[in-house]
Length: 290
Ligand SMILES: Nc1ncnc2c1ncn2[C@@H]1O[C@H](COP(=O)(O)OP(=O)(O)OP(=O)(O)O)[C@@H](O)[C@H]1O
Image (cartoon, rainbow, N blue to C red; front, side, top):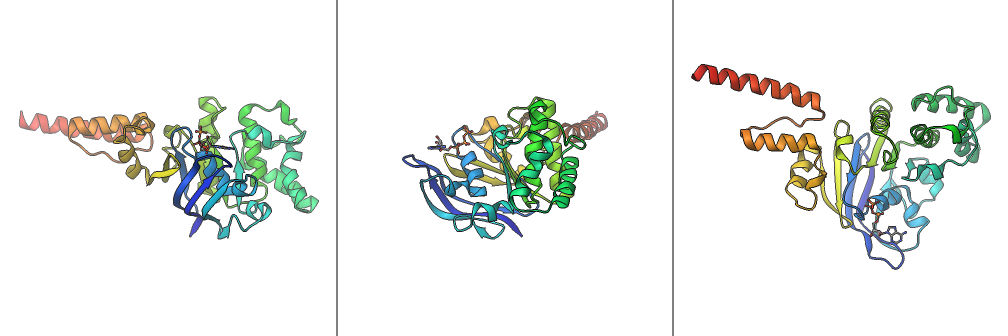
């Protein structure tokens, strides 16, 4: 089952060069996709196209199409699309428009005419999901950056979309906040079956979670696939090699030097375990032949 399909999709903002150029991409339902690429590669535009803001709120010209949960984005209203895809943009604070946490989550539901008892239940539910349980009456202005980010996510979760699209969600967070945020996205993906598509320039942050990586360069898909498919490809490209996470730079360096092949490490613990076994085996071989 597919959550999202870009079919040879091209888009240019008014009076500008193409921001996306012939993008073909399928995002599987329930997947965790990380989108990376150099500055200006079209990552934000991809997010805007996924939720229909492009083309609905921008002029410009497009070719091809985007389907979200089977709906053609150009032919569907933003309201219809938002039932399926929730979006948290990089400037997430501008998405927060009310005084209190509870009001913020209630906002989209009230606009849809959801009944009051249901709204109250949904508020409690989504705040618990994002780790803000019991904070209904807090003023939005008094929250930390990480809590505001979680609130922005809670308010899109309130309408129960199956797909969550986030543009650089960790850019304003400290390393611990970024780690907590990705743990939350992983939980929403694994436990609640949400499809997550996240723009993240630092692939090290998503290595443990992403089952699909899309690399954009100059508005085109430079490569796409599982991390173990994509990372070796970008490591060989001078313009993209800097995006390879340090753990995988180490892996590629060791594989070269030791003439070995290691498993697709998702975090340092897996590397330590495999390297421990590898060193032990080499040591035993050495002792035997001595
Ligand atoms: N509103 C706009 N009007 C005109 N051109 C735009 C607009 N927004 C983006 N662009 C251009 O479209 C191209 C893609 O921009 P986009 O923001 O999607 O890239 P990005 O990969 O998200 O970049 P960054 O990592 O710097 O955020 C760039 O050349 C950019 O200058």
